[in-house]
Image (tube, rainbow, N blue to C red; front, side, top):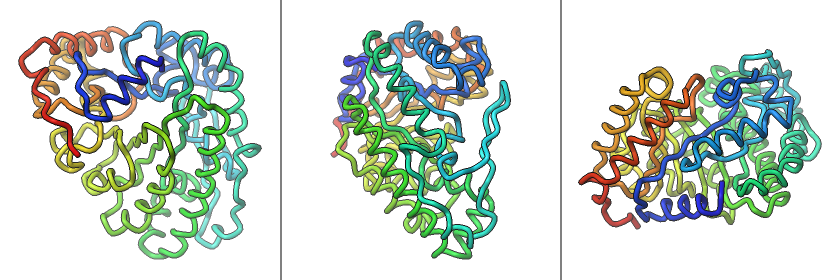
Length: 356
């Protein structure tokens, strides 16, 4: 992100309303490779292809906040690889991490990873080191320390069904696993922060928090996310495009000030659940509208979202979740144009005073 874009993001999080409203998308390997005309495997294994795919998006859409920006990652294999999982990389499909824990009894012997040397993490970090001169020459900076969340990683190490079952039947083992992963994630985030002084944000991605009840969230998620977001940064960003009505009221307590959700919930409801203390990145349907819809359908969906807003403060207009595979440039342009055209309308100035 450029310095100007970063300031827009920080102002939006604080509750200041920009005209037009900012537009932003999470972009990574599910969308960028095929959109830029390369295979997913090429995107993961070629520094040149990776850089040019990201740079092309920034150059074609300079008015969009692409988050986290030049994301160095290997899909869902990134963090689980540090624990020794077997990672499968098809040529043009999403990679897959095979589980390594066959029972709760395997948690104790599970080694504590070192993000400096283990799994794919050194490759993630070194790609950014090598790309940093080019990123900064293009007017951008590395802004975020990024990681999957502790419950997300646990589900890959053990299997989602098995992990959720253990949460209900063996809570002590669940806490032991989440604590071990959280300690690893603190090291991983700290390493990124130490390596790149330009980082002023933390992004965690965890959909598993959407599949647990309030009691389980309070026990197995809240204290660990609060610990991970306890960083001296301006932006504390959480992605969860699974159900979020249970977790949303706790986002201010966790320290989150920017949230990307699924499209099944309205921004108006989320503003009420979070007391308008959290900036929201959303919220048209990503697959059926942004990717699968016509230009006219994207325009209608975007205008409908804007017209539904009761309060335009702390809103970055986007889709519910990350940019999905198959989104065409013309649909992104239609989305952006709809937001810009709406900025001159009656409701563009209706934002109320920011929440406390």
